[in-house]
Image (tube, rainbow, N blue to C red; front, side):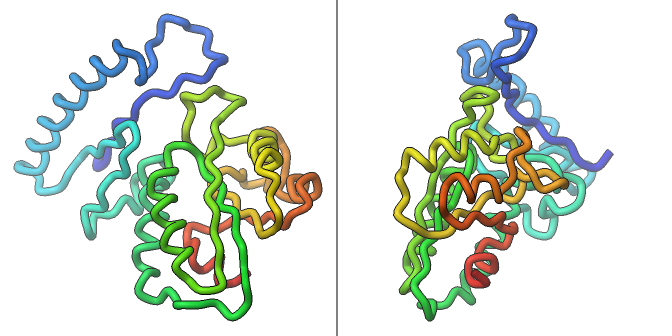
Amino acid sequence: MNSVSIIPVRLAKYRENPSMMPWESNIGKKTGSQHLRLARAIQKTARNNIGVPLRRILSDCSIPCSHGSLLWRVPQIEKSVGLTRMPVDEFSDALSSLPRRVSNPRRFILVTGVLASGFMEEITQQLNQMENLTAELVVVKNGFFGASVTVSGLLTGRDILRLLREKELAGGTVLLPPNCVKTDGVLLDDMGPLQIEEKLGLKVRVTSYDLVKTILSE
């Protein structure tokens, strides 16, 4: 074993066991705090005895640190820990080469889930410093599974479409997070980006984790 993650449990509204306590509840927070204290003690022991961290924490709304060369690339890349950290690092790497302006006016609507909204807001602010480029962040709450499910990977096309319609967007390109689209090209409710595009009347694209590259290529 070389990697362990501790992630707050998110309970969908369809759960069959009502006795399970979500992270947001008083009991969940108390139990979670106890688990985190124990985990930090284990982590300290692992660092001292082995030299590398064997566990990583993704707390309620925080972004895990990269640990330099021990970045979450291999063992955690398909977990929410790695996927949450990846766009932050990709964007940080691209900041030095970010142009001051783009040749033609462009407008983008960045779709994300609640969990990623904090760092996506920072990224949006950075993008808006580029001349001729306008970026707007749209945070979608999960209506299908319930508000406690906050990752963008579990968003449905209908939830995204409903919120974008409410925004009455004047134009631009909608960029969906890459992890909300399955390998067969559709979201969890089998609605594809093309269907959202047709119903919305705006161009819809699935971004890569290298958001800057995606935007500059449009």
